[in-house]
Length: 133
Image (cartoon, rainbow, N blue to C red; front, side, top):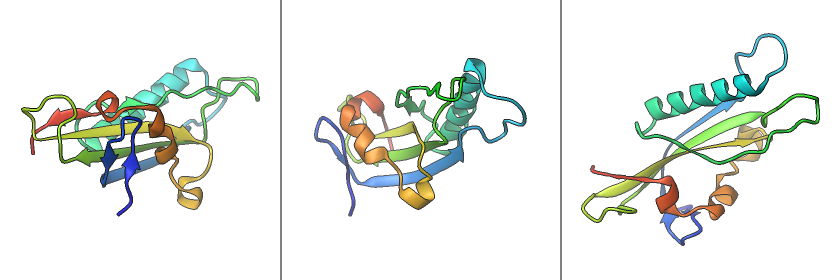
């Protein structure tokens, strides 16, 4: 079984769901600006929270590209719902879970999800929420 390992050494086995969307899907005309970027992230956060675990997602910070003269995010926005059988913070809880959002330029269907490298910068307790089954 493939594991996702965090900076603290916690290994997560259970990937409950994955959501991928082109970052600017729905932008009909023009170039995105800072407000568009915030709006698209908020829409994706709301969608991830609703479809996944109903917990506030952790967003991996991303640097905007200005190569084309405007603030551009990477091509794809991705999220994953991870579950661990132990709580991360509160020993009175049963388990912990996280919804993590990140961006990547490579098509995740063709080139894979880049989550394994990104989470090496974070501890499980930084990104997760404790809860009950």
